[in-house]
Image 1 (tube, helix red, strand yellow):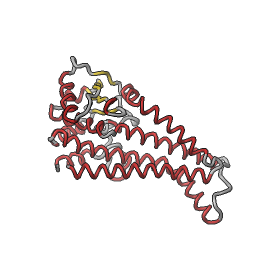
Image 2 (tube, one colour):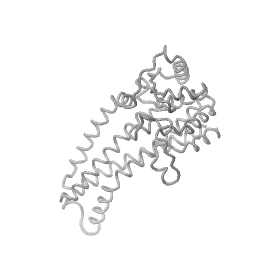
Image 3 (cartoon, one colour):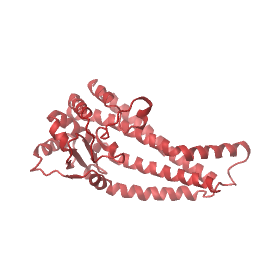
Image 4 (cartoon, rainbow, N blue to C red):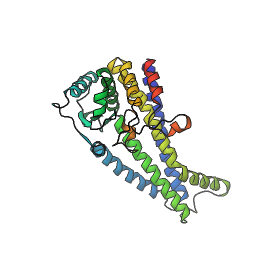
Length: 295
């Protein structure tokens, strides 16, 4: 279990580091090859900063509203409150706000910028179809996302993907409408190679950035699974819950591609293996279950 946790933390850190380097490199290429010069990356950074600031303070309320989540009153859902409160104490975390989504498809997600401003949302289908140990496994998984600041990490990576898309679009439009920089690019073969790299990056950068974001999301799911097993001391509870959630073929009606990565299992019920799994927000459920049962 500890090997699993360490491995996923290292891989997540490497992916985030590569993401940052990639964004900086793209900005440098943009400044070197277009008439915008260094001003464009600076402007993109300002826009990204504003987006990050807004996301930092408002992302939880936006996601909960998009998901049609409502506060779970203790009088209506005492069982859920009891589970969440017990696991919050065990994890040494503040009690998160609890929400329910009126949908028969079993699923759950966590949101919030830090443990002091966190929320957990579960569907009524999850409460109806899972037993207590399975529900504890799911809630422990979401608690792990909160404790590891995964919700903040994914908010920042979404902003970085948006920054890459913005810079790439500016680069591409600059090349199309005669905005290529004619000086300080370099002459001869070096200049040609730099321009070729810039064109390729302008086209492929949004795809590369999206793949990195999805890879980070998948690594954090494995990490949250391992941490949930550590918290409950019962990996089978979460493994059984994942089997039930994956086996339920009903899609979550309020889910969409913008929020799908937040849920414990893909709410859109897409099953992707091999090359197609690169574009999935979650690792295959079978792999997660196998990892849990090997602990």
